[in-house]
Image 1 (cartoon, rainbow, N blue to C red):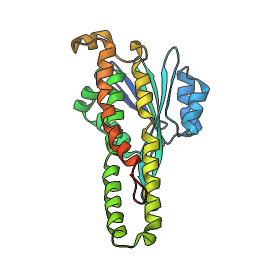
Image 2 (image 1 turned 30 degrees about the vertical axis):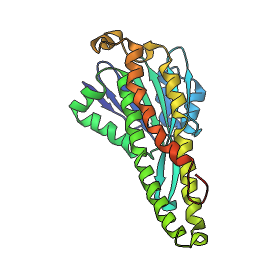
Image 3 (image 1 turned 135 degrees about the vertical axis):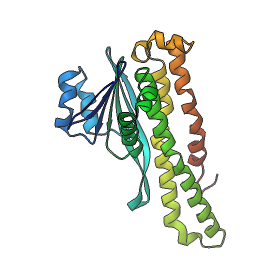
Length: 246
């Protein structure tokens, strides 16, 4: 097991995958990627100027994926979007974050410090690691739905008591958060579906898939299949908010 650290980025290296993680990078911080990988300049530009739009672009040597995740900005009681950029190659995964998603940095530290974590999540190539990252970030988002539910219930009680006019601000805040949550997650399904259709060489070696008694495409598809399960949660909220018909 080889691990290195750098002022510009953090890196974990195993025999089968390198994980480079950039947290709140500036232009100079990405010089390593410019000099050591043949990434499209526009992809690197996206890392510095968040697009807030989930997408997947395919190149001969790598995939570039952007996913946005909702997070709660407590000072404004507002759900906002945080972008994570991924460069996915046959033996590496590079993540670039704006620093607003604590689970991403925490997961990196766990893998860096704990050999069992490294073996579990970085032991079978970039597919396994990418799946774990997306899974953990999506699960980080879902408790926000519980808070939205609680806000809705609180507002409903006051509305039914005859004080609806006094709750206009709170109603608008809840609606805004529902829309923001939906906007940040709704594109995941299409992006991941597109990701699953890409060439197997980017994701998992045949030998590993055979060990799991699956071909590479099925291994990757099964790994991400249950990611779709959570979407009905925000979908229900997206069509209902206090103060409007359900």
